[in-house]
Image 1 (tube, rainbow, N blue to C red):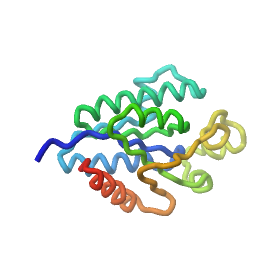
Image 2 (cartoon, helix red, strand yellow):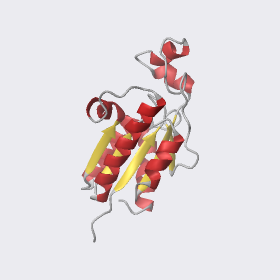
Image 3 (spheres, rainbow, N blue to C red):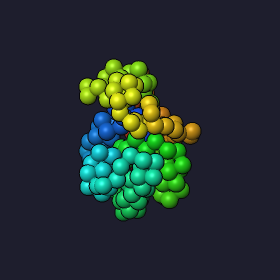
Image 4 (cartoon, helix red, strand yellow):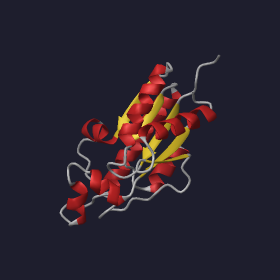
Length: 176
């Protein structure tokens, strides 16, 4: 049995949709199966790799390109790189896809109504009132993926259902 190939699993979706939650659940499954895994969480990356960047379109693009670059390096070395970042702009996600040998885009879908309901920090409510500028999905655009390899819906699926779909997709493509 040869060594398993690395892959970038790119989670995209609005803030609070469940990208990090599903990525962390997948990380557990992958580690149990003996895979090397790294999570590139959008918030963590902003603190370390992209410190000083703001939330303009240009800064968001730079941030997403950096995450894509690191994920590709990891994947080329047999690691399963899990990127959990809003990544609102389709063009940059597609650019990362084009620059990455093994790429699986996972769209974590959830309605604004549900995101507002589950938002403990009240950010959606503030954004809807205009109190927060450049809030993705409200006052800043979020471009849904047109052809993601996997679409999950954190509003209608349990975490376990989403995880099963994702693991099956990775198995079907020979990454597990």
